[in-house]
Image 1 (cartoon, one colour):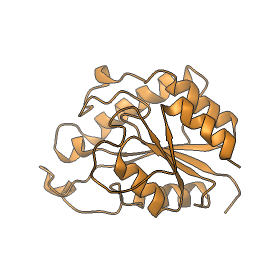
Image 2 (cartoon, helix red, strand yellow):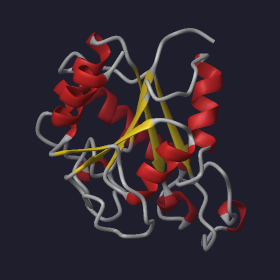
Image 3 (cartoon, one colour):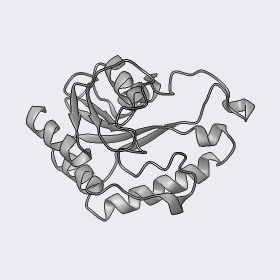
Image 4 (cartoon, one colour):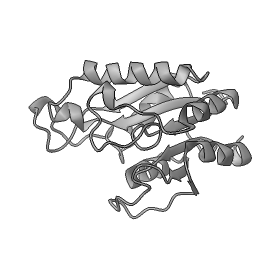
Length: 188
């Protein structure tokens, strides 16, 4: 394992606007300052990884390839601002999926930490408090805590008001750009 650290990012409500169920690239709207924030993380030397639950696949509303089309457009838009993602991991499963092949309780679905562990293994990184998880749901914060990461709740998207998990973040930030300032101040 090397000494590089990572910032895991939830997608909907953290990088792009929350639209309840993003299922079409036409719905994709980056949050103000989000692309620049990703570029800033890149300049600080952090790996950036999206970890996103995508029940839209389990519901049968979109295929994995169609969700990947949305990700390609997201990557393109962030690149226009000088940023990039080192990896994008998604969980297509849901315990109540319409499509049987995706119907299961799995460790990749947040607040499980399967996506985080997979990214750490593939990127050869160590999971510790010098890495971060930034998201707008309590499941993001719980996943980050379970993985031993420092957590930042952003007040965009659901802003932690989903109340699905009783968990407190290490930090709260107005948006992703403000989260980057916290990371810069407290980071490696």
